Image (tube, rainbow, N blue to C red; front, side):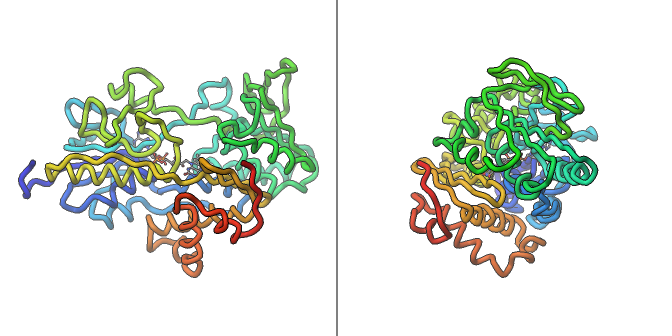
Length: 412
Ligand SMILES: Cc1cc2nc3c(=O)[nH]c(=O)nc-3n(C[C@H](O)[C@H](O)[C@H](O)COP(=O)(O)OP(=O)(O)OC[C@H]3O[C@@H](n4cnc5c(N)ncnc54)[C@H](O)[C@@H]3O)c2cc1C
């Protein structure tokens, strides 16, 4: 254990769900530096609502510097470009070396656009506020200038389905629009434990949507895509291709010797410590736990808290405690038409469940930035948001508390 006067240094890389939570949990008695190339925290679980213009970029973000400074720490707006774990230091883009006693890595995943030729150049990814706002602007421009519009959503997982829901919210009555959803697996949202595929197809039956499941995009061009499916090869015109394919581990992990091979998440034990460098912690999507978890914001928030607490414990000479993943359900919105709550025990649906997703957004934004614009805007409804948030934070979720929100259907 170090002497009381020693102020251990902690560097946190990435300041979104995992990193920002860790920063706010570490006291000023630690010398904390938070590094992220982007100025704003982004509430990614609701970025689909930018696509329809339901939310604006300002509603989904706030200044990282403000939150980090308020916690008594330092924010550096730069990317980390190199890590030397054995030497306990890392390098920022401008060439500054940051030494540390402890480090929390929380830089999420990176786009996997490299897997299909043309995706990087011609598709718009769906992973940040800037990208989703660009999709909104492109859709607005297309619907104002073109008579026939073909939109392709690459990926029929939960991101692709949320994108589709938002496009239908705003443009389902727009003449001449057609939306294609392409999914490699044989059904939509194949990771969900129930047949949500059938529900989505039923909801879309009256709208200009074609689903291409069991089909892969082999090439993306400026105005079309090449598709290979059961019926062979064909071309689909596309004025806008939205890329919702998943994320891959950041290359810097392997380059820095933190993983054994390329394309691996950082192996950590249940205390979130790296297996070889126990002063390095993972918080959020970057963590490769012994029992892999879904890459979800609520796990990232909880891991940020555990990583910070474990650093405090280690500094006091106490053993670190294991991270215990909470059993929160997954909420998937489908525009204004439906929403799904996916839990281990049940899958239920109903437009009123969209309220829960909004409640989570308002509650978490308020928690992270209590003085922020979102807080002011929703102040009157904060109690409603809190009680709705409590419904999904209580495990097991009570079915009757869900029916109190409105009509719901049991899918599984
Ligand atoms: C469209 C979409 C919808 C989603 N919906 C849901 C949902 O409904 N519910 C849910 O729980 N989860 C949802 N998720 C998942 C959730 O957003 C992630 O699990 C969560 O963002 C992970 O948090 P994180 O802190 O690990 O990483 P991120 O939020 O990805 O943050 C990583 C940060 O690291 C920074 N960074 C990257 N590289 C560097 C570098 N070299 N140096 C310094 N900083 C760096 C980035 O700028 C970023 O700020 C969704 C994700 C997406 C994309």
